[in-house]
Length: 461
Image (cartoon, rainbow, N blue to C red; front, side, top):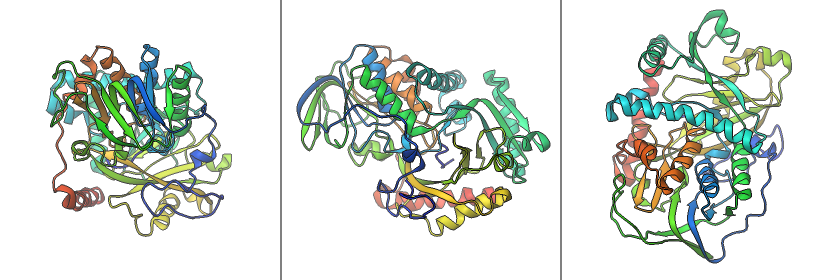
């Protein structure tokens, strides 16, 4: 899967588009409906000291900072732009158990027992999300219900086999197979021969959720510095590669440099995901930065909602390059899909996205599009998340492969546990093997495009 399930116009109903990766001059629907504000987060200036320096102001970084501060650590969080600038504040907002890859991939790499532990922690990540929302009173419109929809007969077989395997091997019984009238009671379209309904899944407003975590972290004592891109990371102990689980002994202090200051810290957390921007080249090699796009319609009438998603579920299809959508709290259809590996917007993106909505839901023919935006996700070769250590005192989590909205929150908590001396759960994830993308700097993108084209063609057969 490549979509982010999981960028727009300054004025409603205008179709200006983000033409270059990483730009933030076009407002997304999430920015227009932002409800959470932070205390001032001025850029880092001068030399500072902390127990922990967190790099990255998305869900991973904000969760790590919050959980560390609650354990009594002094924490400085550095964000290159603004909190939630990346996928955490732009994504489809789907909160799901599982990973961006099938659990069978994890079983093959780590064995049944460890795969089951990862599956159960992914379920914990959903519970953690709801607990953080409730504890910190984050106004992010959290709603339960998720559909994983088949597009062709092969998908039907695979999803039904997945349902049976999860019940048999992992005692997971929240999946319900729907077809016919039972499916149309939740999504009103003829496009899907069937779907799995997951009662543990759901959706939320991702930017308000991320800002809510950051606000909770500030209240717990975390210093947040926005507009503070990190230029250099110096480990407390030198090393040429990624450190194996628990190895390396005691490290000295690390230092994190920005243009106008630096932070000396006992520990560092690298939580940049797709927005690593060359800071750690050996981590860059293990992820591919992929752009994904979302549109938001004008608010729908109750009659239109009844002809689209009457159950208010989130949905993603089972294609390799998937489409995904849900309703917002004010009853807009938020529809995501399409990818770009080059940083350039795909040709005819507007026509293709609008056409998909009309074909799925004829009742929405003529409905206006108020917002369009894009953002980047980081995918790994095997689509499993990449957790690990760069040095004995430098931790990272990345590569959620479009499935990170809940798992990133757990990643931050696991990193906090590890810094506090309880590394067992983090090391279950860190044991997952990862490889650099083949092809080096120049060929890795063409090779991935070729592979994706193969799977896209396979989905159409």
